Length: 174
Image 1 (cartoon, rainbow, N blue to C red):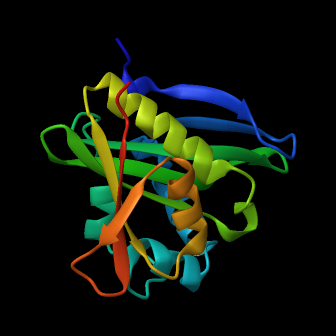
Image 2: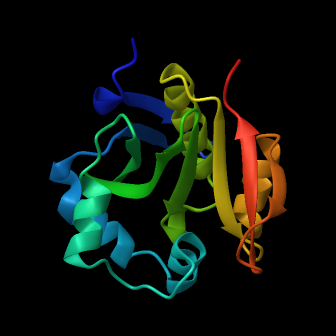
């Protein structure tokens, strides 16, 4: 049985860099805050739908305190110089039996290297192992990179309750 709280895999990105995708831990607090600080306002707005430059203490606690049952979070870690840095992260939160909502963010300098795709693939595998059947993501209509990523996952996009976004759903079961 997959233990998502201990999840860790190494992948090689298209550009040859090694990427570790692993479970987020409470020890990642300062690295998570640093990753947010290195992410542009535009990228953060695409992820959170509102202008945001940092997290409140309450938001930080929410993002770090995951149970790996109903709330699963992974980070993508690269070597920058001689130290590991969080280059991106993704999570899902179960919204109803059999379905979870996913979300991703990748630090700008690492966008376009396949990190979001890798995070989505690993989150889908964890979701499938947990018995989930569907994943969904609410995406701003202007977030073309995320819409392209989801379209490659054979998702179907429908209007969201928000006029500026769409809800994309795809199967994660066999």
